[in-house]
Amino acid sequence: MPNVVTANRLIDGIVVYLAPDGGWVEEVARAKLADSEQETKALESEAAKAVAERRVVSVYPMEVALHDGVPVATSVRERIRASHRTTLTEDWYDVPL
Image 1 (tube, helix red, strand yellow):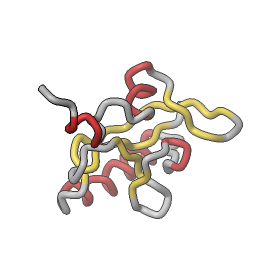
Image 2 (cartoon, helix red, strand yellow):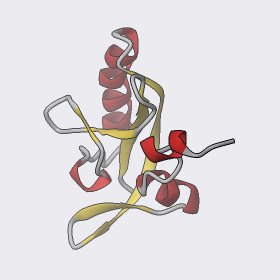
Image 3 (cartoon, helix red, strand yellow):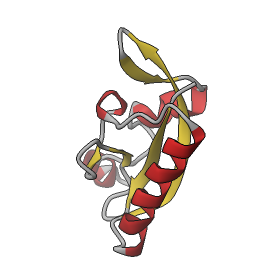
């Protein structure tokens, strides 16, 4: 199965994926694909630079399936992370305790 590399953006905790241009995107569909273990290791090495620059944390490869040529998360955990429902929204802070 192909892989993408995922992480959390350090500034806000949002789930991001390594993009083909070396940047980070919030949509798994726009992530750079790795079709082999060697390609996955190359993506992880590229992502390590962003960790060193303190742009992202918790970097790891993630298996994806291709649906009409577009990567989609396969595990329930990664589908939840891809939906961006695991972080607090701004309106949550306005809720009285």
